[in-house]
Every structure is written in C-alpha cells, then in structure tokens.
Image 1 (cartoon, rainbow, N blue to C red):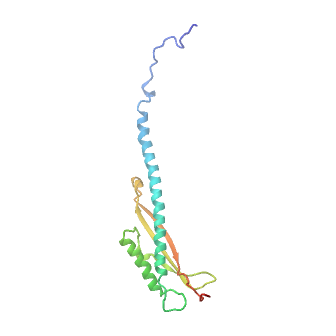
Image 2 (cartoon, rainbow, N blue to C red):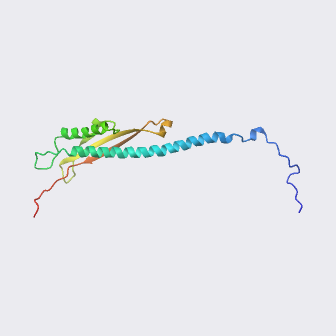
Image 3 (cartoon, helix red, strand yellow):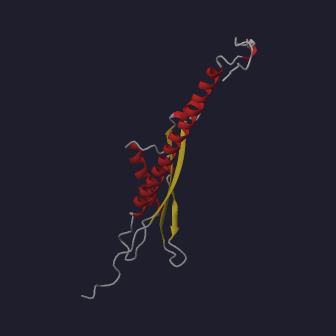
Length: 168
C-alpha cells in the first residue's frame, strides 16, 4: 500500500493572531457561574416564598380562631361577643406571635371583620383575619431583591354544640 500525505508539506500552517481562540472560555465561565447562581437563588428563594405564604395562612387562620373563641356566654343562642372583643382577641394573637418571633408585618391590622355564615344562616359568626409576612431574601439579594412578601387569609367560626337532649 502506498500512502501519500494529504498535503505535500506536513509542517503546520500558521494561524493569524486574530483567529485564535485562546482565553475565550475565560469570559464564558464567570457568566455561566453567575447564571447558575441566579438560578439557584430563584429555586431557594421560591421555596422560601412558598414557606412564607404557608406561614401567613397559618397565622391568619389561628388569629381567626382566636377571634372566633370570643363567644357570648350570656346568650342561649350561639353568637359572638361584641366586635371590639373579637378584634382585641385577633390583634392580641398577632401581637403574641410577633413577640414569639413571627415575621408578621402589621399585627394591629390582622382583623378584617365578621361575616354571616351563609345564605341559609344569616348569623354573623365568621371571623376573618389577614396577615402579611416579610422574610429576608437569601441569594436573590445579589440582584437587589432584599425581602420576600407573602400574605394569607383566615376564616373561622365557633361550632354549635348539642342542640337536643340525648334520647338515652
């Protein structure tokens, strides 16, 4: 077999300096690292945002339950105490939660009102609460996002007890 070279002269061909790619990866690596860091920040802070939302809903539901516990004990029918007392219980719960370390933004604004149970039951028994929670961002702070805000709504009502005497 007779092999002959593809080129008559096997010496390397000089490449002009402008066509060289030396150091081109040096620009791509920091840019890629920044993009990966931002994606990690989105994942981590998105999970923190969902957690903050769950906390806000939990605090709002507990605040509404605290207000719904203000039952008028002097009445034969189930009804709530005056609205001022219900409001005081909701706000007291939110203030206690803040004192225990909860990130509630405005504990005095947690109470939203008292609503009727429904179309078939016009009694005003449903206590509504709203909670805003603020948490610091972790990795998104690199791009200027310093805080994560979340809010939650809660509704609660006292439950009717036994209405009729047991047959036994």
